[in-house]
Amino acid sequence: MTCSDNSTCTGTYNYGDPVTLTAEPDWGFSLKSWAGCKGSTTDKTSCKITVAKDSTVTAKFKAAAARKGGAKVSTTEKLLLDSGNSFGFKLFKEIVKSETDNNIFISPLSISMALGMTYNGADGTTQQEMQTTLELNGLTLQQANESYRSLTTLLSSLDPKVKFTLANSIWYRQGFPVEDEFISLNRDYFNAQVSALDFGDPGAPDTINAWVNDKTKGKVPTIVDPPIDAKTVMFLINAIYFKGDWALKFKEAATKDDLFTLTDGTQKTTGMMNQEKEFKYFEDTDFQAVDLPYGNGDFSMTVLLPQQGKDINSLIAGLNQENWDLWTKQLFTNEVDLYMPKFTLTYEKSLKDILISLGMGTAFDPLQANFTKMYVEDGVNRAYISEVKHKTFVEVNEEGTEAAAVTSVEVGVTSAMPSKLMKVNRPFLFVIRENSSGTILFIGKIMDPS
Image (cartoon, rainbow, N blue to C red):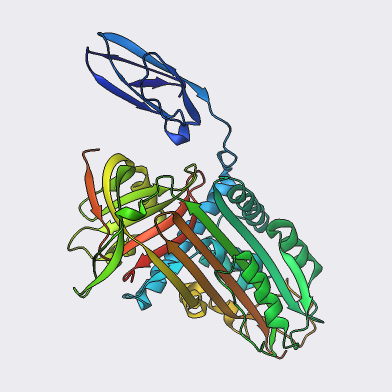
């Protein structure tokens, strides 16, 4: 069927032809009328007819309610989105190098946000290295800040059926001379809650952790270990919480114990969900991919399963923005008999060595780091990043997905179609993403779901 202006579709068919028309979500239109329509779906997005005689049939569409997050992003915002995804792929691949056989789950968005706040305090070589590592080349500081703010607004107001919250906070030691401009930038562009705290008080870690626990709905209860080091002067923290029900839920009765094959050939029993429905799907000689939408379809999980005999870490090695765009553009609706394991995972990682290996070494060097835009210089203290800690949680079951992430940047001072079968029964990669902007929220690798 030929469509014009995404509002009218016409096609000429022979007697008895079955015709199905589906309004794609990104059209922004829903089915209004189609003569002879039978079996229209409740959401008015598709309709099936059998042509009664040789004729031209026409489908007309009306504009659906405007999608809050569907507005096109600006060129500058697109640069930040691509930068964030590129940074996430780069970071994920670096972690995989040291954890080839482990489950991994990170939030590039959370890490980028926490480091983005810190970036406002950097200068000189430190700022330049952070810019390159975060893939922010081509963006001024002002453009980066404005884009972070726009992205937060976009993601937080998309789908009423999906719970997504993103929160930022800065906690600094009472008496530490923080620059007013640094605080203002992070309040204005990151909506950061800023608090001075007596780090010497034994209850200070509990205060910060209570904020983290609240923002992640208890899924990441702590990020700061007591006692706080005497040299620590600041924590810059991002927290993300996500809870989305599948648009097409799995039936619990269909979940059966099945075998999952590990990379060494051994097998473990795991709860394997199953449903045969229409999903967006792609496959080539290297892997299969299926896209599972949440809620209204603004967010989805994309699962990539290496073909039999292919290695998951080889697939991960090919992750970059160019390939990701190519793969996701080839996802088309197909009938898929999907087997998918249930799993729950908690993950924790110090990112200090990873970020140093990616080119951000000066920021961690007590003698070379330059964060003079963060605090008032006194000729004695020199601030540097002493640690970047990342914690995550994810649970995937028949209902949907619940996930959370926290990133803490700790600052110290030197002194002070035909049916396809996809059985995810071996290590796989998965990505939770927002579709209108292309933002990658989480990336994971499951080696053992049990």
